[in-house]
Length: 233
Image (tube, rainbow, N blue to C red; front, side, top):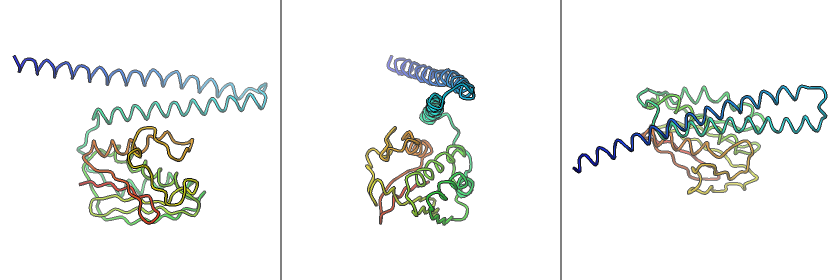
């Protein structure tokens, strides 16, 4: 009887899990379609000559908000898929290649703030995991390092002994060398900078990817630098 009860409980839990997963995917898809339609209609509207400058600015603001909602929708779906372990983790992932390929995305931010970048790659840092998830983790940490930096700041990237270490100077608006709240740092929607260009989900996703992949992601402050370290084990 106990065996039957356990089997029945397991079956029901599996059904609930599958139902929840399907609902999230369906809801995300259904939201994405009308958001795309809204954005398309607004972009068509803003091109009309009869709009006043004030009206055009209002429409542009709505378009920006719609784009942010689309991005948030995709990000939350990704987070759900990671939590549901819908990715294979059996690939050989070259971390140094991912870093090299990802750096070009931050050239604009680097130039705008005159950020000095120092890279110390270790040869052949190959880990087992999922290539796409590893890319997202690395890119989120790099984005964090460049986005929350200051003029004439630094970003140091180092791979060593099966570890990735990314260190950056902080945003002067937050106070030089200010220690972030460690208990909230990897929480969803936690934003300390107030930057409108971020939802506060990047580090939450990075931590979830690390946990799912069997890696560890830690933060510490040292000599005025914010340091994020991924231990690939």
